[in-house]
Image (cartoon, rainbow, N blue to C red):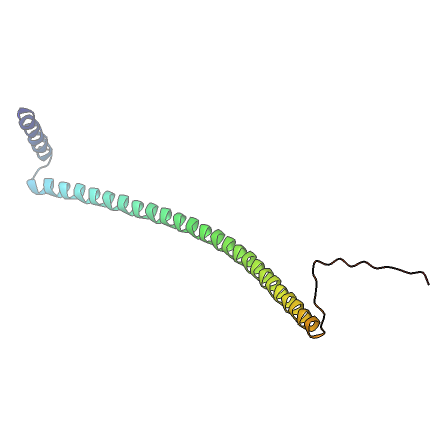
Length: 131
C-alpha cells in the first residue's frame, strides 16, 4: 500500500511539474488535449493497420481455401468420371450377360422342342473318314 501511495505521490509531482511548464492552466490543458489527440490518432492508425493486416490474412486464407476447393472439385470430377466409366462398363457387361443368358435359354428351348436333350457334360468325338 505504501508503494502505491509513493507512486501516486510521484505521479502527482510529475503532473504538477508538467503544469508548471506552462504559463496558464488553459495552456496546459490545451497541451494535454493535443497529446491526447496524438494518442487517439496513433491508436486509430494502429487499429487501421491491424484491420488492413487482418484483411490481408483473411484474403490470403480465402485464396488458399479457393485453391483447395478447386483441387477438391477437380479430383471429385475425375473420380466421378471414373465411376461413371466403371458403371457403364458394368452395365454393358450386365447387359451382355443377360443377352447371353437369353440366347442360351432360347437355344435350350429350341433343343427341347426339337426333341433333343442337351447334354452339357457329354463329350463329342468326331470321326473323320477318308473319302
